[in-house]
Length: 554
Image (cartoon, rainbow, N blue to C red):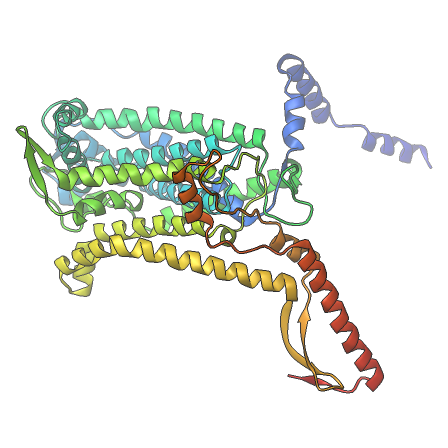
């Protein structure tokens, strides 16, 4: 080796100045902050790899886009209800009196470079945020990821969902257009329907008679300060609990409640997360650039006197409007107070509807009496009652959403809005029960089918005729991975009242587990494997004896 080659080799092996400076800087920071151990801990953290786990990341990345786009919009929006005469670039509204909030929205849309893009990006990101949260929560629900020790994390996720709904409502109310004003009017009507306290709540929120002059500034403070801070805090709590409890994983060989099978955060998931963030951002930017949403210039400024036809809130708030439309106009006067049951009953139902979702982990834990830690997920068909309840909950939500669009559906189908309203009223009571029953029976049927697969394998549609005339159907045995997944589910049996079990809990366990499918026992599994080997041995012997002659009947 020449001296020139030696020098070049030393130069290649010697780290660059930037690397040396980075190492010195990192050591300086670590000696004062002590973050190296934390970085190593997170870098080695194992996460399972499954597409259904990505919905939580979609929600997180959508929230990041919301913060970025919201910061831009805040610089130009004027949260004031002072009246002005519009003289801006959008000529169709010249001379129209409007609030400064609506005027600044028009200026942001038509005069600020990139303003319309950021408005639409913010709105699409909000919708994506809520979609991802809903889908993520139902993935957790149907797979039982809320079980111990994650009950509190489920409540954190539920709180994030509720805060997202409040953030969306407060956000699309800020432009002070006709559509958002109608939504505020409905909210005021719900508050006024509450006996005794309703008028005080309305007066406190609106600062006087509706619409007052304070609602937009107050909603602005709630929307840009209080709710984002609460969401950020809950996301931090959610992630800390996720790390502390370990990640769940789907059943399979080697996967237990005591380990996590997957890939480390660095470098695998760091690269995946970065790419996925840009993918979500790109899709949202494409939607914002090509698809219009919330065109307030078509609605006009809010005026309490008209109510636009076909007005609905965003999809995640539609169910609240649907309940109000489907409820008959019942009222009663008790002790001089008017009780608007058409408002109070939907309000009470909304509370029970959401409380059931929030408290379900504790309800199921009480029913099963299961106090173990769970890190392996359930397959939805192995929990037919839970899956049926989830589908019934979703069906109620869909019916309420359809009820909120009864006028649009009637116009589109050229039908009677009264007939549609009665159809949705009846469906509200019939469809959830039917959805629960059908879903439960389908899950039980899938369980029976999977049990047969474990014992007999997959059908190949081939039959072999033996020398004595017997017909043997050829089955393809399951591999170890498939068999493990199908036989590793938890099994519960109904409890009987007595010995510490109350009658109510006994009836609840009977409701959950009375249609119990007996799992495959180890003895049955050994017997089926031996039987399959015996039949395969007979077939192989026949083939060898006949020299490969065709004995298959297709």
